[in-house]
Image (cartoon, rainbow, N blue to C red; front, side):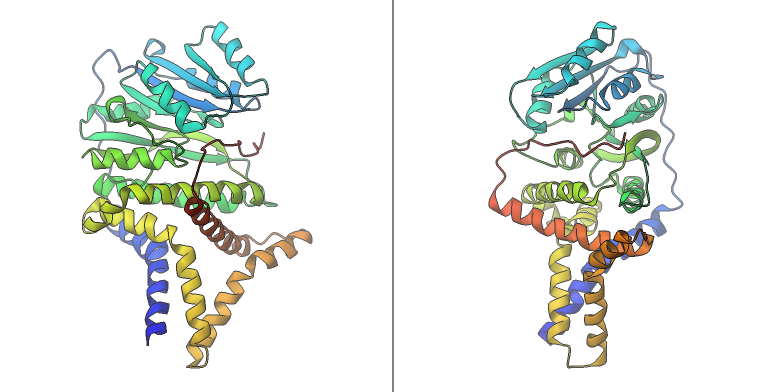
Length: 388
């Protein structure tokens, strides 16, 4: 009986996070329309774009030009960039564009400091009432900044996330599967914002936040975007997504690169859980329900997968159902191997790879938890290989 209960608890938690919760959002949020922002009185608020970079020579010039190629008033826009000991042409590119007249405040950091330390150092130097933290490989649309900033005429809004559109999709890697995941995440976050103003974590690649709500990020935090979003929600302000604030990203195609990135993200997730776990005590609120359903249950997904699999082994001889459950789970666990063998034969089956992606990324979640448990001493990073 105990193992049967464990099996069904594990299955329910997985199904709730990946199926039931998105379905609830779709049912109750599908007919809601985002309120149309009122125009800002002139002059528009000052905006500061914050960016930490490390060896981004492939994409940096295009990124900076896209920020300033905007429909937002040029006099109300500045960019603060911190180079974290870059060893390629990153610093040269920034200085060149600065001489061309772009309003860039450039700080060169010695050694490796990590993104959180750089952003913490840049924020006090910024003049804007609105901050837009971003990554080097995220290319802005001319309307990205105006669409983000427009929502801040509503005093209830504290943070607005952009809509990240992926490019560089290829069938020979995981880019289509990663695109499917990001697209689904964007939709879930949009509905969370519409229903309760509790969008669970802006993509750190591009979002806007009121400067007076921007917190000091704890040292060595990996997922600073999630930390910042939940701090905004805790302050009583809303966090929402703006589908029309489009930014372009070259989605990862290499499974090994994405696997390492997901381990880092997972470790950051558990750092945040250590800070925000009290929100789970109010699971009946929009913020608590979103946090539990969208994030915490998903972060614990590897443990639920392990629990369901072990339970089905122990219950194997009790009836046909648990025998079938065991074989189905075993087949799922082996999908990364099947996909690798087929890839070697130049066969790329989307749904098989999507299932393999699910199990591989849950392994990354588990390894990220182990990394967190061992202790995180640095938030330095290496950019994911750019598809340029």
